[in-house]
Image 1 (tube, rainbow, N blue to C red):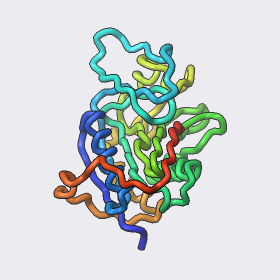
Image 2 (cartoon, rainbow, N blue to C red; image 1 turned 180 degrees about the vertical axis):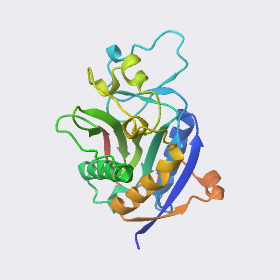
Image 3 (spheres, rainbow, N blue to C red; image 1 turned 90 degrees about the horizontal axis):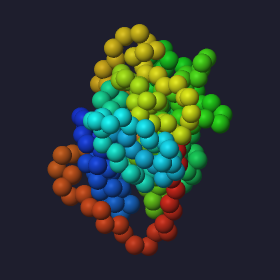
Image 4 (cartoon, one colour; image 1 turned 60 degrees about the horizontal axis):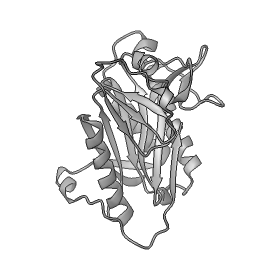
Length: 241
């Protein structure tokens, strides 16, 4: 039996709304009265800018219907849109080894395991960020996190079934010139609903982080607060994978 945790299976919600929810939950987790929580969702089209984004990365065509949001996560620019499974683990890392590098490796491992049931053998590639398929290298998932007071926000984005063109036509995604991006649907050769992937993503997180998930009670949401309790040292980190 793993440690108790919450899962919120959300639909497509705006990026800023999801970010506000993450921060509210992070405050509650930090205060100690709220378990580790995972949000699984999709976003409408949005380009998010990490802390290391450079001006030359953006080449969004005029008239494109896409929101642009500056964030506090690590890394550079990336794209989110319908057909992409976004996972936001809000974890107290003092319960998970208190090691940011280990946390990133565990997120990568969870992604790799998520893809196994679909016959996709994903991997890490030395010197490149995110999760890839090889020969030739094709990026299928990105990771970008923020750690404050040892509580994580942001997470990963897995390309399930969407047009990957914005990754190369609108931005220099993750700051990598000439990177190739792919999707589960493209690799498998059939449409893949995001809802088909959700249970595998949740199962992989449960295995890797030793968690036992229950649905986040709807009545818990109004009680969430952004306030943090004093007395614990602040550890901040922003990491992109």
